[in-house]
Length: 254
Ligand SMILES: Nc1nc2c(ncn2[C@@H]2O[C@H](COP(=O)(O)OP(=O)(O)OP(=O)(O)O)[C@@H](O)[C@H]2O)c(=O)[nH]1
Ligand SMILES: [Mg+2]
Image (tube, rainbow, N blue to C red):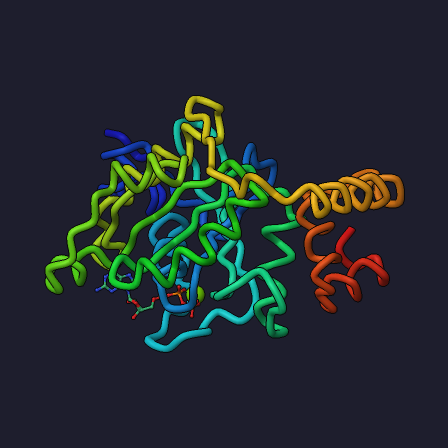
């Protein structure tokens, strides 16, 4: 008789079905770090809970998650740390609790960023999607709340969207765990370099701005050799983004 006591994870259907092992708060010796970003109230914490087995509080009002939560999962024998971020509308001139999300996306160097968007408000959500794609190319768009979108007769051409953005798009209804196996698989493919993302970036910057950005980028890299996204920071400095200026001066961002 097999007397070995199995953990809750090993006995759950999800584990057996698709190789997912929910690791809860155990995130030691991870292979990859994955960030969950997106507008408020798009289902980030719901996705987080279904992957980690934790019960990060979800709520029906925007701005619920105020500090970042961390949890882990194992997929195909690789360990992932998942970071649930507060909802944010923009990476620019953020409020205090949004700054936590911005700083992690910018400087936490996640291996993959999952951008969770509300399929019912895609146009509004794309603002943040495009901003995030300016600073990272390893990203997947999780098009969530598809059950509601269907009820609202909203049809989204996911293939065209993926082609136009230059990153994979996975449709989900996280509350009902629909699309989650596809999302895990896509995260793993990006993390392991099997899917190469080529996000579309702003091109044709006027030459005087381009020259200023190049000069500033070189200065920033001289001062902070390990800083990622120096070009993005150069743009913010030219705009006079007070938050970024303050963070750079204090060394908070590096
Ligand atoms: N119908 C439906 N509801 C969902 C889905 N995913 C999440 N929700 C609900 O949407 C609400 C917000 O979900 P959260 O997971 O808290 O959203 P969040 O993005 O973490 O929110 P913030 O932390 O405020 O940014 C909750 O009531 C969820 O149950 C989905 O796919 N379909
Ligand atoms: Mg949340």
